[in-house]
Figure 1 (cartoon, rainbow, N blue to C red):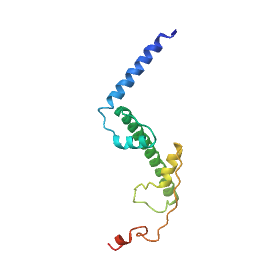
Figure 2: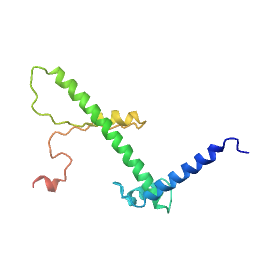
Figure 3: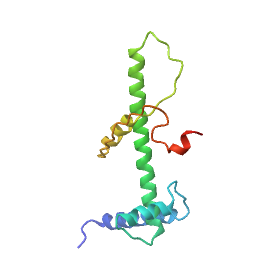
Figure 4: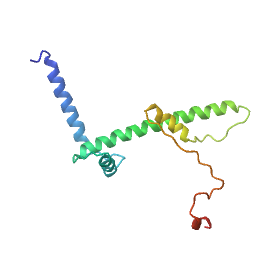
Length: 136
C-alpha cells in the first residue's frame, strides 16, 4: 500500500520527463556520430537497436570530453601562470596556451582515468617517418 500519494505523481512526472528527453534525442544530432558510438558499444559487448539510447551515450560522452578538456585548460592556464611568475623580468608577448599531455593527464586523473605515456625523444624532425617520404 502506498502511504505517500505524491510519490506516484512524482514518479509519473519523472517518467514523462525522461520520455520527453529521450524523444527529443531523435531530433538531435550529437557531435559524436551514432556509428562511432555503436562501434565502441559493440566492441564492449553491448548491442542496442534503440537510436535514442545510442544518442544518450553520445551526449554523455560529449559532456565528459568537454569537462575533461575544460579542466585540462584550467591546468594549462595555472601552469603557464606559474611560469610567467617565475620569469617576471622577461615580458611575454606570446599569450598562446600550449596544452600538454601532463595537463590532460592531470585532468583525466580527477575522473579516475590514469594515463601513462612513454617519453619519446627524437633526434631530428624526420625520426619515425617513412624513409621514402624523408627526401620530399
